[in-house]
Length: 296
Image (cartoon, rainbow, N blue to C red; front, side, top):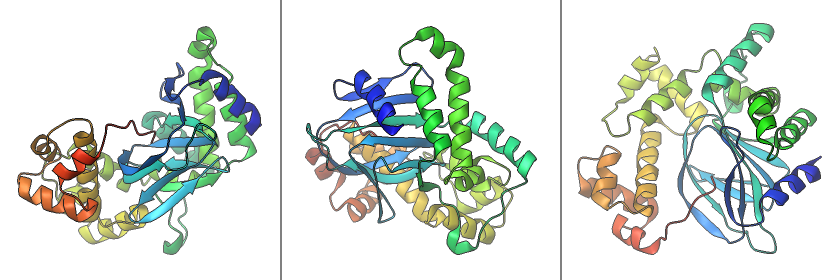
């Protein structure tokens, strides 16, 4: 079945780039040149690789995945992402599917109303906001049915939403289901706090404010946040701000604009923290980077 899916995508992607399929949030992509890992922010998304391999680095840990596993990011996460092995002979080929939080929430709550709320494993096995999952028959079948809609506008318009919902359901039932249900189902406080932070990056958001927003004590919030993201809330906020700023600089914004856009009042503080993380000052970094469209 994977071969059928790969052939469907290959036929529609003769050249490099990202192609809209006509189904909201579903894109196909192809990369034939190596792209080193660079700062990015993963929004809730599925990344399915059909050929080649991709890398994502979260808090120093590297996730390498190919057509044996798909990546599921259930909350916004600051990462470094790249395609270091892509070449014309062995291109990176895949599907990028943004997760509609409204639909995912509806499905997660429906599942929990039938099967009960998520029971968390021991802390060492807490579901993460970023995870890799093996393909199963339900996922493969749902993805194939989704992509078989192809270029037929009528089929896509009438069946697209229902087949995308079917794929979401397969994800919720698969290996990544626990972390996804924790993000979108009952008890999704950490996911809601990350969404709140993402919408208020330019403001001075405090840990107490985030904890209050989701009705938790500071201590409980800190513990649960680190279980879900592998970072403390302060580390996470700093990474989100710096990664967003780095992306803005790479796309042409000047350093001061990028710093202000993510909530830094002091350009010198921003430059110090940027250099500590990336090993170069923002100006040096911008001069050494060309605008590259990251296939996240």
